[in-house]
Structure formats: structure tokens, C-alpha cells
Image 1 (cartoon, rainbow, N blue to C red):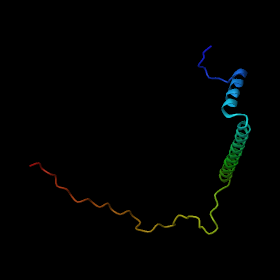
Image 2 (image 1 turned 60 degrees about the horizontal axis):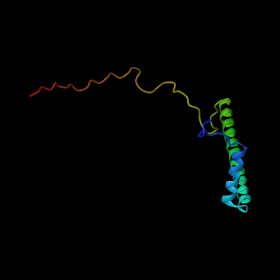
Image 3 (image 1 turned 135 degrees about the vertical axis):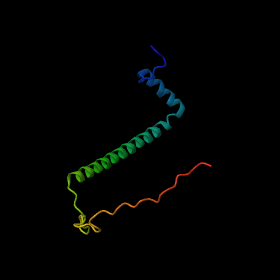
Image 4 (image 1 turned 90 degrees about the horizontal axis):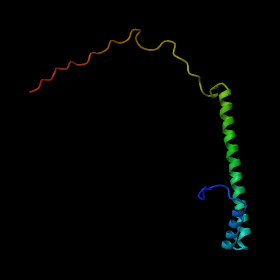
Length: 106
């Protein structure tokens, strides 16, 4: 078996990890560490749930807007194409650009 393989620790590894943590932090600090870890996990869970709610609400708004036909605001006039566009009935003749004389090398 490969010694460098990273996987889920077995029961004996967990016991060794707990003993090392107990020696490093002491018996008095372990309940405080566990409490702060639990509070952190709880805050993370609440933040994730809030994010999920906002995401679903935004998705519902987009889906609701896509299903409803567009209606202009009450004070907004719908755009109408002009019946007779202003200007001459024939297009203006294109203007000729000023003639350019070819340049000759000296």
C-alpha cells in the first residue's frame, strides 16, 4: 500500500489525531474549540441558506418576467413608426468627392 496516498483516516488515525489535539490544546480548551467550531458551522449553514433563498428568488423573478408579456409603464407612450417620413420623396444624389490629382515622385 502506498504510504503517501491521502484518504479518509481510519479509526486508529482518528484516535492518534485526537490525542495530539488533546496534548496541544489541553482539556480546558477543547470544549471552547468545539463550541466555536459548531458556531462557525452554524453561521456558514445560515449564510448558505440565505444565498440559496436569494438565488431562487432571483430565478423566480427572471422566470416570471419571461412569462409575462411586455407592458409599457403607465406614463410611457409606446413607440410608433412615423406614417410619412420627413424629407424629399427621392433620395438625395450622392455628392462627388473632390477630385484628387495623382502624386508623382520627384
